Image 1 (cartoon, one colour):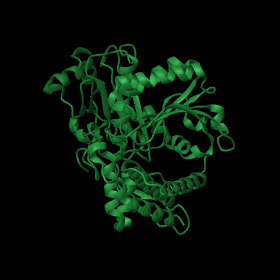
Image 2 (image 1 turned 60 degrees about the vertical axis):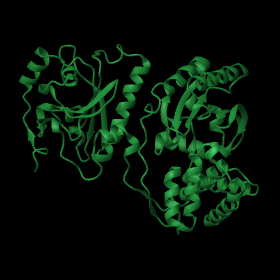
Image 3 (image 1 turned 135 degrees about the vertical axis):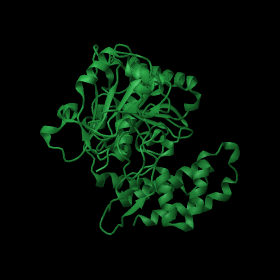
Image 4 (image 1 turned 90 degrees about the horizontal axis):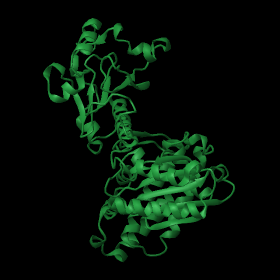
Length: 449
């Protein structure tokens, strides 16, 4: 057993004396005092995350604001608090990639008499702990702490838990995702690794908070829930080109006054955040419409890339979106998505994926520009992988998997990835590339059968 895995007694008396009579340990750590050194795994201009010097459980981490704040909410604006909670989320996701975790605990402790600098404990509970030894019982330092001091736990097999892992999610990757068999006769495979999901607020710390605040101002009590889904949640989000995908569930249909106010809101946000213009996609739909979407069409208000804010009718043709929100969506406001979106079976999802693929076959009957060709190629890749695996991959993940499975189309798929990121000035020869694109779409359509 290594020194990191051995347990040692915890000197509670010395801890209390140091905590009550000494300076703030977090402020001293940030000032570089060696007597208060901890292993810092992430820091930015607002917050710091570090391993507990006296861990009760493997991977025990603390996160705190850099500035000395004490009340857990009173010293923060709503936006500041959301940024800290976003960091706690990202740390939790990173920890669970490298530490076996049955349950993740996130809590704020401390005292005005000692350790008053507010901080949050992020603690992975390992599998196999009896129920009576879980929760607060598992965090009791009187039951001895792990050895190894501030160096933290011994390295685990797999990806390392480091500053790069937490602070730069784009530099890290999950282990390959096994693809389950979707139906009898389909074969499993390993999808290429995708970048882990980003912290919900790491791309633009105030953007989501601002959207929610403005929606609440416009909709007031009519806003039931706001849910984030898509690549920012599931992984492979590209800060330069990916969209923000949001579902806003309302108490009733958006009326004319609300529509005008929401349109003004989206225009103002785009003007204030030009890098996000045309990349914020939001659906506003009444809870009653979600309840009946499989059997009837209802009003939906939508803003999406390339389209202004508009009203349309939506029904079962939105099943894929609602399935992804229900299964993967993150709550920004309101109840769980499972409470506002009715049950959708895996079979219904797969059937909708197949119908979507047929749409792209029809689309391929007329020449399109390379931007559209790229979207169609990557969407068809994702549809086939989803249909065969039963799981929705990212576009990048699906593209890599398809290149390995169908090397004869690898060059075209690579072009689609390039076209997706290229500026309009860099795209040329649209008509020359379309026949190959159309042939690829027809080829993939045959693979569904």
